[in-house]
Image 1: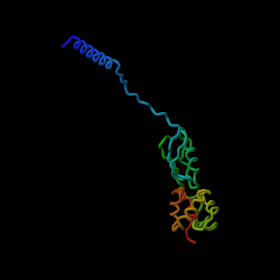
Image 2 (image 1 turned 90 degrees about the horizontal axis):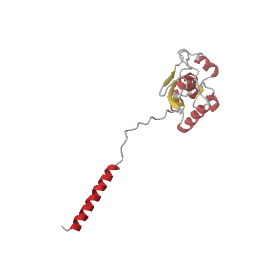
Image 3 (image 1 turned 60 degrees about the horizontal axis):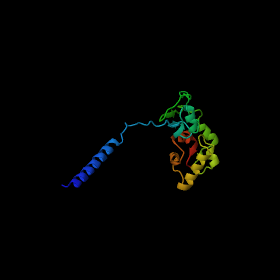
Image 4 (image 1 turned 120 degrees about the vertical axis):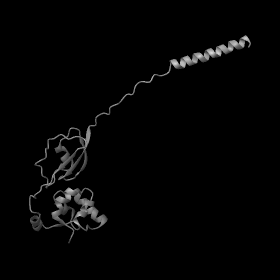
Length: 181
């Protein structure tokens, strides 16, 4: 090999070696895994059920009490038994708050129905439906809208198909309504 070829080959190998050293020396160093803690949410989700106006899932502020959850669900129904409810208890995310029903009615439904008369949900106006316990103007309008859209109710329990009418509301109004003329 000629000397100029040997010099050129030496320079090339030298540059290659320098490049490898530079590449290894400047390689980024990986750091350990960093665990990021999610920020604590300012709201919680609770399930309010039983003797409330509008049972369901509600998002309420962190640190809320049972009383706040009941307010979110529209308040207590007329048939609520609050003797065992601690309204001041702080609730946590995912908790179910069950408001029990009274085991004995406060008044005789038959007596009330005979004095006032049963409300026929197939013919009643929004105002007549609004007068029922636990039914406000929005639920009364929903009953009338459902009746106009899907036809007459064949039994009182069909009210459960109306948006916003749950089992506790049906239990509250059951003895005051009819589907018969």
